Image (tube, rainbow over all chains, first blue to last red):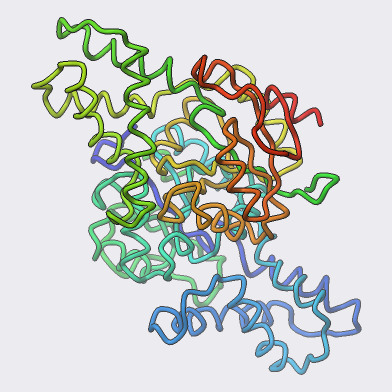
Length: 233
Length: 233
């Protein structure tokens, strides 16, 4: 089980690279908040929540707070986002339901088939900043068949910290150079490359139009438009 | 996704409970050593290796050595076992091949279908002392479709230490009482119960005839003869 260049495992970023967080979070926000008589730009709400993602993880990466799983960070930042949209007084059940939106995201159309093909030749695992429970729910919903769920919860730190990539390679008993990080974000691939992993850039122009990278900002081993194209190589 | 008693996830012991380590290790030992002109009681060899299992892990559990994955412990104890059978001068490749025997074990006949059925109602994960790489290889070989691979490598300690069970429940965002440990060994279930998990005893009289427990040595929530019987409950 190995690629022609010695790659034995493919590691996948998940939010944006495999699943469409923006449409999913906007849909669930509408589902929860509209029946309460609230109206807003649901996509802007999703974007605002996502904008809290890096600052929230930076608290952990910097060591200011101990490792805290993404579900908990999402829930904390939700208060700030709701406040910025003038929403208050949601009950615990409603807050939970909103936070669970990140567990109910749909994959881009190529992904289930693309991963199934790649799985015939490679070990495959998510190496995401999402915690185990999110990854399990997304896998069930979208029919991803992972060999293992690796990533932040295993390393107890967040990408792009080196520990996350290295713990993933170590879990499969592989050298970093036998692993390829696949992502639609250059920052993720830059950190993977700095730790000796191979890199594949998967363009996701629809992740957040206007902000999505159409091409990698670094030299990568593979540059494709989908997981199916990756499987074809 | 929940059982009538609030159980949401099933955790499985693997060696003995799901896979037949004895036949598999004996078979691979013969495969590697017989062509070298060596003859021995291959099953006795498997048993002798397995006898080193608890003492090797105890070095970690006691804190005498840092967490060391089972593949490495297997490799270390292999030298001792080979010596006791009068075998020496194997090369690295042969030692690796023998150690990999633990990655090539076959499941008891009920397991693939039993787990597939249980997966329709529960999250399922191995909570084994085996490391990620062993669990991934056994899953591919035997068509186990896990939600995640939990266990020793995640907790960085070995059962029956509490951390292993608690880290597994935490990974799924569940309370211990929402998880059920399924094993053919009372010691495993006793520790699981002490940490608040539910318990299922799966009898495996063929694991090591003469030593296998035919019934649980503690009060358990469920006592069955196979994973199929477990799925039927």
